Image 1 (cartoon, rainbow, N blue to C red):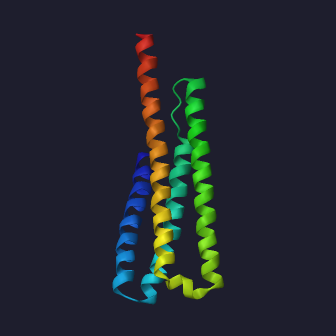
Image 2 (tube, rainbow, N blue to C red):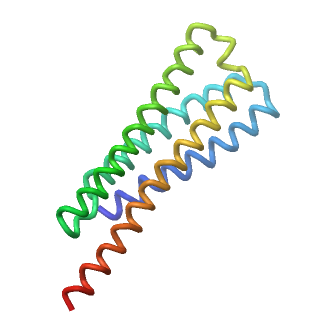
Image 3 (spheres, rainbow, N blue to C red):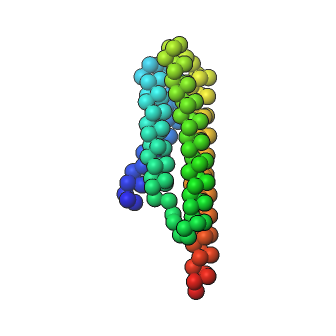
Length: 147
């Protein structure tokens, strides 16, 4: 399972680096290949983040039944809301792009979706990090009581 986590994390990191390079190339080159790569990377990042969230939901830390469920549930709710808003926004961007093809190469349109993607990723990683931190505190508290 650790190996699968590394692949998911590596896919997210590589996709973000390539997307940053692609956004820079959009400023330099006005090429259809660069624009197409951008839209492909958006979908790859969405897929990798879905796997990341699914992994977290499946493998959440359960230390103490009641308290762990509260931590896990609050993170799941926040992740679901953030993911729903981001996916609906990204789909709205893609729908507008399909209706008006000139927007697929509009720099403001691309940067807006890029910023939205970065904010979404920060939110999900901060939520998972906070839950892991709370769980670590709960583990320390639980095992100190047992000793």
